[in-house]
Length: 388
Length: 135
Ligand code: SF4
Ligand code: SF4
Image 1 (cartoon, helix red, strand yellow):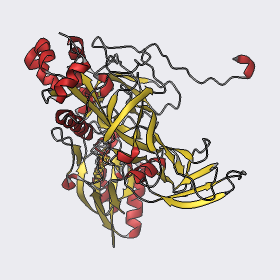
Image 2 (cartoon, each protein chain N blue to C red):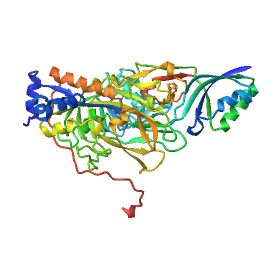
Image 3 (cartoon, protein in one colour):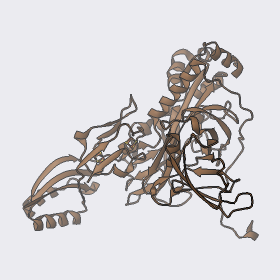
Image 4 (cartoon, rainbow over the protein chains, first blue to last red):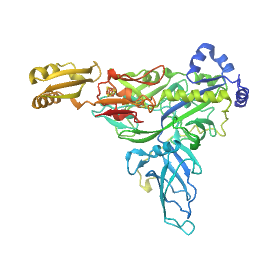
């Protein structure tokens, strides 16, 4: 039996849709079987709340009098990119403050905006006949700028590698602090709750898909950068290493810092925790096959981050079930594990999205266009012009 | 006579050696183990208070360092800000005494101060700065 997204939306509007989160569906299928589940369950909500460095926001400040063609822009002393028009800028999450270094940066500016805090705007320019002003210093809040929208080039990684450190010193990475002599392992995926692990071939997610983004409705705008779906897969369809990614967009003015949090990885830099929830329509039996997969059937690879190269040696494959148990065994040694992404907050997002759908305030959408599935990623070689 | 509160970290291979005994016997130090966590397969940690003359303490610590024990001053207190905490799970992987754990049912961070030996390993690890150690 197949269902269309339109039919599911009709059920949402009449308050008859059955929505489960991606954790609940596992037990439901085990109890009711695949055929019954397709008949009964209409939507499964998935979510993640993890550090996503490839994030940032576009802001249009409005025109001052006399006006300025902003060439260089700082928000709370964090440089923003202003090489677009006169009063547009993009503030990237990982940009560091010129004054406070790793204590403050782009992600903190974005969170402060969301929290309606005043932000110091400073800009310089060369001055033109139509934009004579050469300098400006003022304060803005999210309420008094024109548009402010989050536009994240790469979020919601479908699976991610786990990290450890075989060297004799602690190292500080984007996977957090890694203790010496394989002292700990960190990982970053919501596993069974993770959006793209529940729809491994992106059958229902594409350009234009409506999603939960940091507390409001947002959209999938494109494939994410480094989209790499052509990866080795488990028989259950899920990739065994980082694969698909999504570019996301949403209105910063409606977001909440409960689901958008600036963070600092000591010794590494600044990033943004982004809360994303994606509803998966239960269109057919095949979807149930993917949705019922649990942490014990989802795998990733553990890499040695003490090797400072693009390709790092592996300590083998491990299931999210084992990673989430708190300890794993590497070379006969019991090693504690820790997650960078928050499963608890992800579950909260999945349940919030579920409530929105149950209340009828969130409808599902068909993708306007599917995402490319043949893409591979390139590496950056250091070449002379004639070697191309 | 002075006292110092220290955190000692033992590499795996010397965990079982009776070095604490030698500290007392050879260096005449008063030695009080406030908390300890030594497991067979992970590095051991100990929060100690030692008392003695300045010279005795210096010599005792030098002996420990030569044995491969790393030493740091203990923090005075630790505060975990549960409002700020996003319950990720970064700090539990660094905490050898399991004072920090994510509850498997509620998925929230639990901090058991009684298990904490104030080693400070978790201090700068929290991405949202929810852990404060007083030094
Ligand atoms: S200071 Fe932190 S890592 Fe050390 S024992 Fe206490 S809670 Fe655990
Ligand atoms: S690292 Fe920080 S946010 Fe994560 S669980 Fe520990 S205290 Fe909470």
